Length: 207
Image (tube, one colour):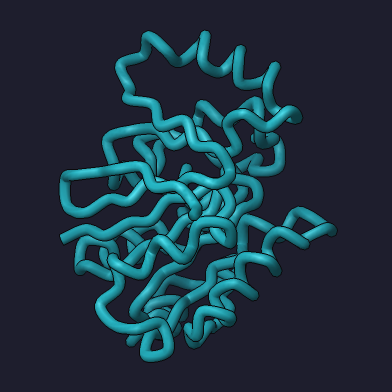
């Protein structure tokens, strides 16, 4: 059964992932895929997410899919219990995922029941399309990307950081553009996440 935890800011809501896990965090290995953050100098949000995982007791292994082959990544991801895909630029993430074959591996792992945790871009990555975040992320940073189709592991679009002052005007335009395109929209504030188990989903909020 698919188990996904799709957050705006993972470090705020991660305590809510515990019921999804197959064991206590100190017995679980997390592959921490940080590639979406590569275009940015300030990665403070990335470190906060990683530090929260460590604080909870997870064994964390950093993984950068950029420049890797599918064979190399398959070897790296053997034996993991949780796949964490960080925030950053969603277009850049998808571009590197397709080039490296990580998109196929992520789908395999999700469908084997490995717990998938997404933070911001990592949450958008598993949606049917990532096209809707064009106002939030710059697609020009991924010049070789020819399709904006995401992993399509959920049947809705995750809209992260909803309600942030920084994105209010942008979200007005996004929602106007996407409200009639036939997708279910999950508007997530920074202290919310979507928990997916099989074909059921629910929104949880940080305590």
